[in-house]
Length: 445
Image (tube, rainbow, N blue to C red; front, side):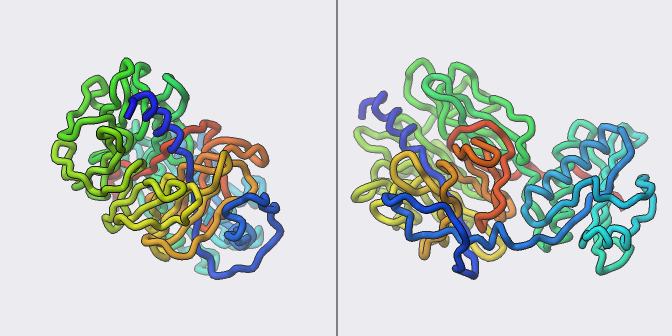
């Protein structure tokens, strides 16, 4: 296959993303009318996700001006807001009182303001040059005794990332499942010869380009230890695999050809690679890049990924359009352009999320790990693509071209399709969302 033609194909096929989740009801509310030629018109968005009232939670104000305290509180508050599990009361709702680090929490006063849960976090420098992060959570139904209380010692240069770790602990204490914000995303942004790999915090903070400027980058993926890999063409050469620690040294594979996609399974014991071989693009798998074997005869195979149970998924050619395959079997409808599958290990079961549609407008839909009934997550809000699941399986991130609301950018949304919130104005493709390496927080008794 001509290399220039293949490059155009791979970038063009990287379109879609979808997101969805099952809800127990099919009752419909007011929704934008679907266009007459919408191939997803018979798959409706249920409104419960965005209309169901959420429990109200208060994040106690802080008078401390210290960087550590301000960072901890802002990160925890933002993560709880993005989680979609609570309605965070504004600081203006705080009852009169003294908000010092060790002041008693007036649970009854907060209850009168509508709070059902209360969170207090405190960040302070320790005498040894490290930082202590303290967190408490109260349920008004349990009185003034905290239902969660922990202290962590963290390196001073990791206060922000470890604040996400604290937020996950708090979310876990209040919902029964830890949050997924101690994590990072990667994606590609740019066009033509100016395509670079970026990494960004889970809340949209600190977006940074990672790949060199001379790389025309595609297909980023996190490997063991949080090492970031991607494929790139340098000086119009074939697409080869690179990694962040050695960005100028391509990684050799035992199968020759341009690399158009890569993915690792959850324990990093298997890698999947999309490779252009002769006039076809196929998926290969193996324990490493030097021991790859053909995994499927299906052609035009892009966007490899692994399900949480280790099944191989990818996008490949169908009779009319590209389809999502899991273990070699198509799970997306024939005749609908589908792309970018991601898998959410939700507390209620594994969900497959992908983008689907025709033309320039794509929406997020979801089904089971092995297919089944489809649920639609987005409708009438621009084109929504390249979904990626959070580590806790309850959220999906995606790029949207919507012009209403907060406008185009990178969004985070509940897996049931509700309460989408923009975390960055950046747009791109090939989004991935993975846990950070193990936390360096040391719990103090």
